Amino acid sequence: MSQKGLVQSNIETQPQFSHVTFILNPRSGLLGPKGMVVRQIDRIWGAANRRYTVLVTTRAGEGERLAREEAHRGAELIVAVGGDGTLNEVVRGVLGTKVCVGLLPTGSGNGYARHWKIPLKVDKSCRALLNPRIVACDLGYADDHPFMVTFGCGVDAEISARYRHSTVRGMASYFYHGWRALREYRSPEVRVHLNGDMIYSGKPLLLTMANTRGYGGGTIIAPQARADDGWLDLCIFDNLTLKESLLNLPSLFNGNVEKIAGYRHFQLQQARLERDNGGYIHVDGDSYPGKSEIRISIQPGIVPFALPA
Image (tube, rainbow, N blue to C red; front, side, top):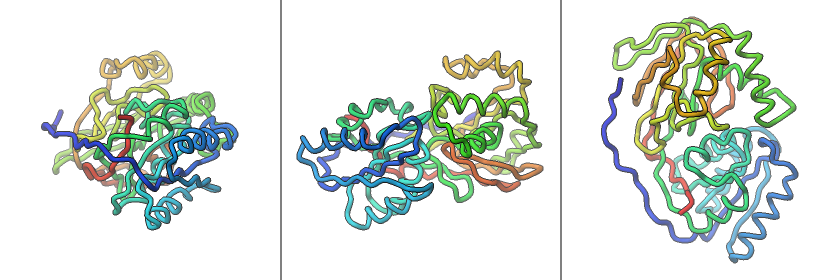
């Protein structure tokens, strides 16, 4: 089911930035010693005689404040050094300004980087930002929570909540918490309303609003999704058993997700979700307590994003 029409991407070439800030999350994914990343930035950007600043976050949420302050100081490009959650913080900090956002992907899943094929090696992605192209990207909202990658209120939100409190980072830890969540998760009744009509009612294992093709880690939940077309992709899996979930796991990585029995897909720009009970939601992999009613929307082309030329 689709409301989708043709929307032209807004892509333009950007002159070299004269004031750039890197905001580094030292706890992101398998980053390792933050000094190694800083040295890569110094080597590449220093050799290019560029003006730049590197700031390191010390706690969750600080990236938003640092990005806002740097935007007010005149930064033209602010680069998130981390995963999708770090990128989310930086985007929140620059909303309402003309500051461009970039990404050096050092997270666990790197969903946004994978969607745009940004190099996952820091030296390559860092060098690519010296002369980027700018794409006007969309920003989804779940109530007042913005997301660049995905929103979810199914087992993915439960996994994110468990992973958030884990002391071990990386995809192995994520899969461990995913395995436990799949065994224990029980979905509430969920109803999805679009333009006054109820388009879904059931107990989904997954209910995801995707701005990109996947969560990260190579998963592909919405094969047709684009981050710059003005639409969100609603993907629903009915409540599969643990055995069915494991048997269908390869389809989440090989692009055949649409062949899984019980997979439903809609394209939309706004929707209203009703749940019998509240519970966790996640935006870009970070979990929050959610309400029983959630309103979904999108702001097309609101984020100027720097991509490899």
